[in-house]
Image (cartoon, rainbow, N blue to C red; front, side, top):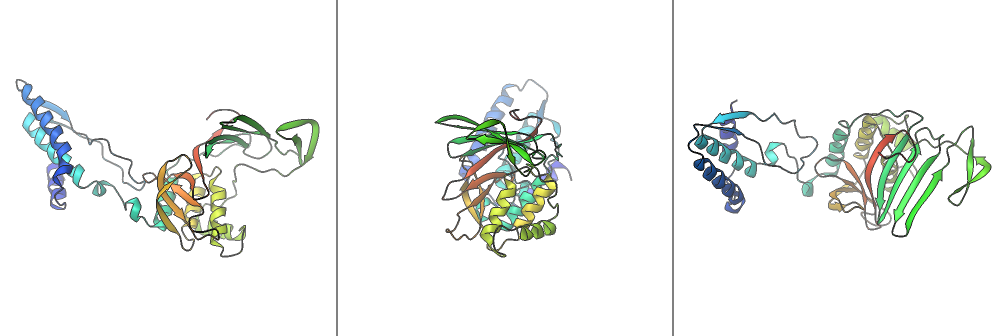
Length: 322
């Protein structure tokens, strides 16, 4: 199908917009036509037609075709530009959009997040590396470098109005870890330990197996939606490879009585689509917040405060920036 037939079809399927929505496009078109008239001595104009910048669309959006370069006369270029501007104003959702966040279904949001997760870079960490996470809780910024296999010393740096605090997280080697007194290592002293890997390579990679895993390792009673939701959040707080993260979202989508919180925000104030579930401490105690365009997990909101995930990476050493 050529461009003109496509524009005609889109026009037939689309209602007319309000005049005020077209005014900005009309103003831009008038300015462009005036500029073209001023250059009337030139026989033709080579114009690259491109859509104006738009907000990020949901992750399931199909790939866009590359823009084509058209060589048109000044009048033809202006007419086609006006038609394209009208289409962009009239049918943004028909050009790759989805259900607006305010009407989004909680289950579908999680499934969209699962689809988006599968498009993330897949990094298989080495045992000697570290999971780096930068996060925010209220006004406090937190950076952590945790050992992938749990055997190497990690590091946590917290920065707030009160200052900066560094805390060593001892690795567990041969059943022993260095002893701490406050935030300081006690030279020459060790204590019994069990390794706590920052990366779980054993987590399931499909939804059914993930749901069975969560049920078998539940922190609460069987059927306790609030405990299950907190277990999901526990694993989201670490590093997950794409297939595991997608399986976790798909498993979470089967939780009973999920609902959306359209105007949710994480602790950094970033707006998103919230997902919550019934809680013994009141509705919306914990809200998982997802970016409304990419379905990336942003963090946690809720009446009791929340957190924001600002960066996650795999690095080679504790203290190394991402």
